[in-house]
Length: 259
Image (cartoon, rainbow, N blue to C red):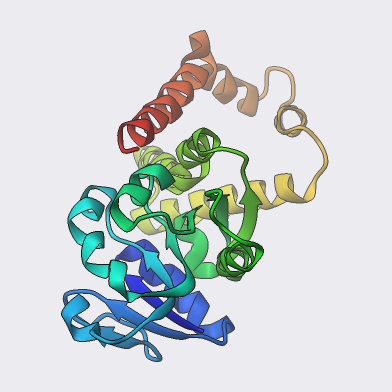
């Protein structure tokens, strides 16, 4: 299988590294410079360098705002029976169809842990897609983590707000947590180790358990103890719940704007 990857930023690059290791396909990547590309992929500087080539799949990995300007130049490069696969947030299959014509289009919404094979991937296929296109998208997704097929694109945009953008929220919480540990007198290095090991252990414990996360939280607390004192501050006036609702709503609203 011959696959073209248009764009190779952080997300596209993370996924490409996993695909190269696990998939029996030839990947050609288009970006301005080939310096950061992993070994095993061909490099092209633009569509003019690919004249005469045809690809079984064209993966769109540029920013959604760039798609209208970039993609029309690649429509002649899709082989008969091929499909487009977009990993761009928000940009709908209908909007892509206006640029590439009535072609099979699948959207995959990954997240950055694709780099270590732990991505949560939401998938949606337009009605033109056949089983072979879905099978390819499923393989692309499962190579980087898990694949969750969704019934409509609004659900995909909601997944974007939770999982696609989610690692950013987690990293920001970790940053603030590290800063709090430093404020208690730990060095930056020690604070980072304490926070990340604590967060990692707690998340792994929750992942392995069938218990509700609220029950796991309660299992850490003793009445009038240190954990309860801290939790009472986190839960004061429902501020944490409201902040996370506002955070995910803002991300969802932005995904809707990008459609």
